[in-house]
Image 1 (cartoon, rainbow, N blue to C red):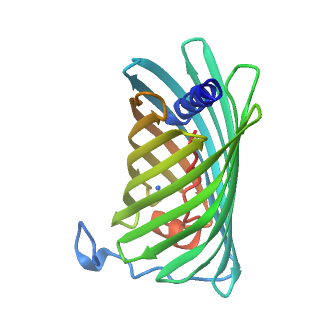
Image 2 (image 1 turned 180 degrees about the vertical axis):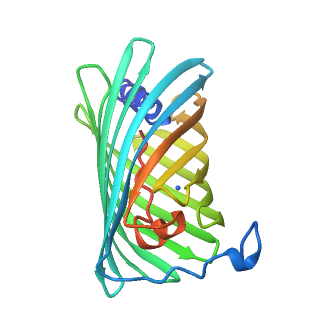
Length: 279
């Protein structure tokens, strides 16, 4: 069992490195420059496609990782507050002489109005770690968001299975975050999450904290974003616990459609994060 658990941890750690590379009144500026809350409409389609690059350093191994990500999301407003969001993502990472590829997708069905959003999600992912095996992960759960004029608070809880080479491990997930609007086109994100992979008496915990700054020019539907991500991982269930940390600096571009501002994109388009996996 320890041997199988160790193999699972090695693959999940590599996968995590592959993914290592979203109060009322305005926070800045006069109040009359700030728009009134976004009104919900029906029948609309909004979304984005984004590309990003991340550079990470892992401790205590001092492993340098370069990763590229391509992600996209589209939201369909079915009317009467009902919405459907679809996410797709691809990540390629390189460290030492090993290249890893991961693919993920999610489906969100939920109700949204001007005050809150609540619904359920299903997501799946596959990791190809560059050796003769792969990891599949399946996760489902509940998610919710609460809207204020210049704040969005959001969270999710999920449960699923991680499968590899005959090993079936339980996957537990919790996420909590806030999006803070300085203006309709300047936003700061704080996101935290905990993923636990449990197989027999072995637990692999992944704790993340991510800070992101977003800016969208008024004349172009393109958002520039950059930030910092901290990851702590811990393996327990052996005679002693093993742990490590990773720091990542990342940046990228998001091309949006169906929205006029960054805040409108979230309030009328995709509201949910599409990267809650443990790798």
